[in-house]
Length: 138
View 1: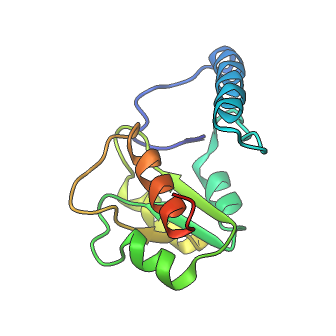
View 2: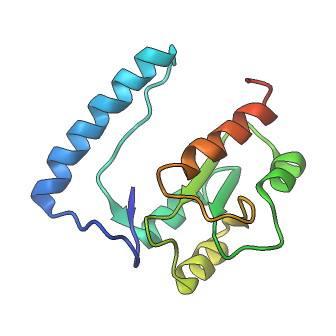
């Protein structure tokens, strides 16, 4: 989780601790339900610049950007697929242009998820489904 310009929900320090604990429990239960061996790590929200730096350390860092028109998720997965992928998806309000530029400057690959703007709740499922399909796991 990261803090970006267009985030609608603003967490206080007190909220962050309680909400992070709740999300950790959800991640654990979801991992158990689907038989996943690795439990996804949930951390308190971090600044946007820190997120960019951390995501850029992955062999394939992807930024799902609603204003991207040229590079599709499919084309990136076909040309650079690997075992370790960072996927960055914006908050309710998407990314500010300067955030997208900063992410790209940090090394993230900006991709489009198609002609429709997906909700922040559905975009992760869409991206993960595409990755699973490409990896032959669906």
